[in-house]
Image (cartoon, rainbow, N blue to C red; front, side):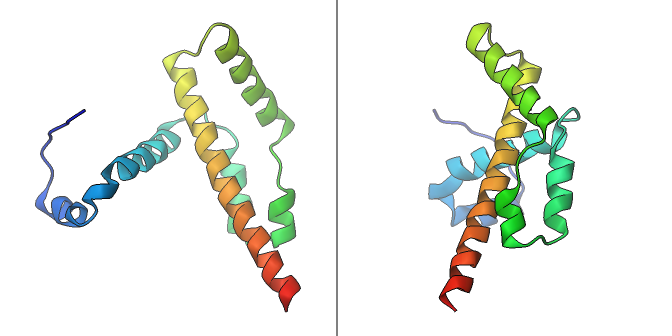
Length: 120
């Protein structure tokens, strides 16, 4: 699909050298926008506060979703499987996926840090 739109000159100059990565940039930007604008998204604040406290790699690896968050995710999965999600629920699901992505990245870096420590 080809899309045409107007952008400020400073944005164009930043994107010019990244032309081959525009689909990825747009996808990541949309995920972040959905996560930020979702009012009902519970769980992200706790995860961000946890990571802001600079926990140990072991604590990051041990991080698990709360029972309440797991219940919400399970309900969305079941509803998606049976009747489908509303647009609001789909946005909530995208937010949960974004949160999972952040946690996975943190866990991967924590695992690498533990490997570095073991080598020393």
